[in-house]
Image (cartoon, rainbow, N blue to C red; front, side, top):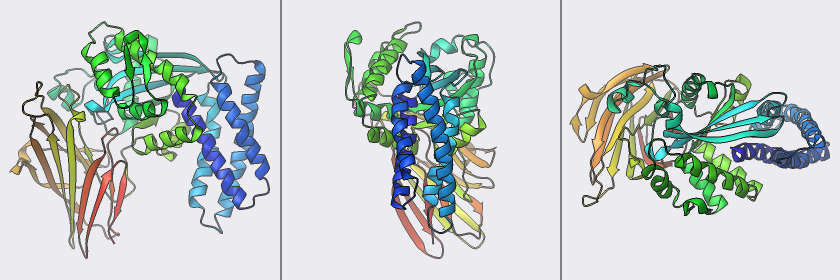
Length: 492
């Protein structure tokens, strides 16, 4: 967890430095002041993760943050004024974000009171709408710029203490046969904020975890793998194993899942040991490597954040890290998978997507098709099926015309529901080993007079998948992209 906070802080520092360089190129007269401030923040980052701090260390951190707040505010104002005569919209966004972030640093770092953070480990090899099965949680407490608590808990240990009834999602009750919602299955919304609030509600029922949490952070197994590629292989001598970016899934699957049994402390111990070593290794990663890792993890929705603090949440939204299910466009689509097979089949399923848009005088007709291929061979020792509760999020007013599974009409199996500004089509299917399942939904939307623009929203934790978009209106346009993040398609 310390590494996550350090990464966030250093990323803000790097953004600050890059902005300073931009201002230097423009000849800003106070460049030396800002350069000094940026240099001081690198020292602050090191002091925050220093185990023993002197009063002078604390004083330096406070003074440096105060200077950063003042200078970033001035820089934001200056950039805004300059944008009136120059095309500096990206720079305005960056400087506004820095100014907002600097104001929240004391709160995040526990100035004057405890700052509690909960970290969710999302196993996207068992994909859920909110990023993956919640296997473990991390708890971090900061007080006066120091980390005073860091522990990892197995989700089953926490769930074993839950006694109050929480109504589960429909799919959890029906396909997982769970009449009560536990924390491990509470992330069944594609909106991370909604899931985080549910998780905090569960934690509030337990005295040991009933705290005010300044932030909830979700990190997927994919993000862990990428981080391990930066740190290099980590040897856990106590467990006679070495974990790397290439074997993280298979090794943890064997050590944590296969050898894990109820009541065992091994799962928590392994993750705690891994986290302790990674924390040391991350200190050696160059700042630009950390910045690139954070930026990519956020962009691909493998690192998501939420806060009940409105100012912090607005900051997460500005940074594109909130994992929200929203759109400012008239037309959007978001395919959402939920592995309800109690297995890690998402590592073995290949998916392709196809979206066809037909514009007429009165309506848009959309046809979304996805093909899921179970790559387990017919002669494999273990022949598990991929069991998927599939949902397609579309704008309000969408009307289903036809639904097909492997070419056969299944309109009667599709559930249509309303969630906020969304119409959601849901259907369950299974894909046995060495077979494929094609799911296709055709629906109409009211015609929009605006230039057609489609916002394709990627599910948190979903693997990159190829998408072909075919638009037919006044002209015909075909685009093919690998969906690693949210994408916007414009059809002129």
